[in-house]
Image 1 (tube, rainbow, N blue to C red):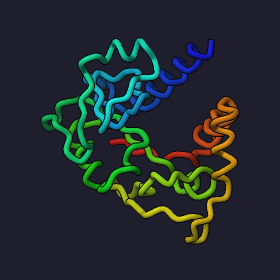
Image 2 (tube, helix red, strand yellow):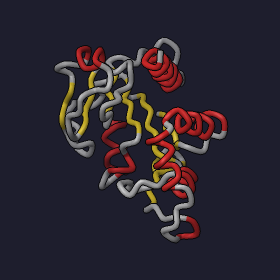
Image 3 (tube, rainbow, N blue to C red):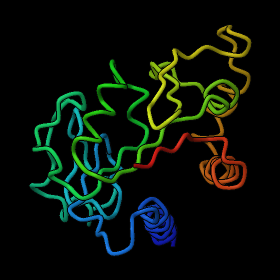
Image 4 (cartoon, rainbow, N blue to C red):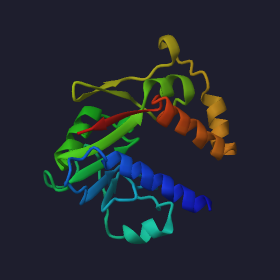
Amino acid sequence: MIHWLKDRIRWTRYKNKIAHLPAGVSPHPLLDVGCGPFPIPGADFVADIERKLFDMPEMESRLKGRFVRCDIHHLPFATDAFSFVHCSNALEHTEQPVQAFAELKRMAPHGFAETPAAFFEKVINHSPRHRWIVRWQDERIIPVRPSGLWGTNIYLFSSATWWIRRKIPVLWKAIMIFLDVILNLAYNKFYW
């Protein structure tokens, strides 16, 4: 039951991400960059800096031979090799997010990228592995070094959310859905 629900949520999120495509434009072939163990269900190819086992066995078998190990700053594909590129929760980890985003846009005429929003990073769940808070302005990204509230290194709920995420994952998922879907405070979303 849980596996089925996770699968439905992923497919719904995938459909929402490609919904902005012009009528008649197919998202395939679709490249998922920085997917880790959770590639988007509609992905035809995946690229990441390291190889991880996908969390669903059917995803592992479907994408066998379609994983490319590479750096997001220098993707080894021809310009416009894909119809759609997807990148979720990767730009905030990069050394040069502007260059990485330019590479994503080079891969496909249409795409979607998302990064944790400033509210999420500063109040709910800062990750020390995040190098940037990435905002979107005038069709370009603006990376800013993260800092806690009022420019300090104080992050209000980081330890509490860490505990909830690991001990009560269903509650964490509900919090994320509320922040993301209802309040639109969890992620910055970029469409092109």
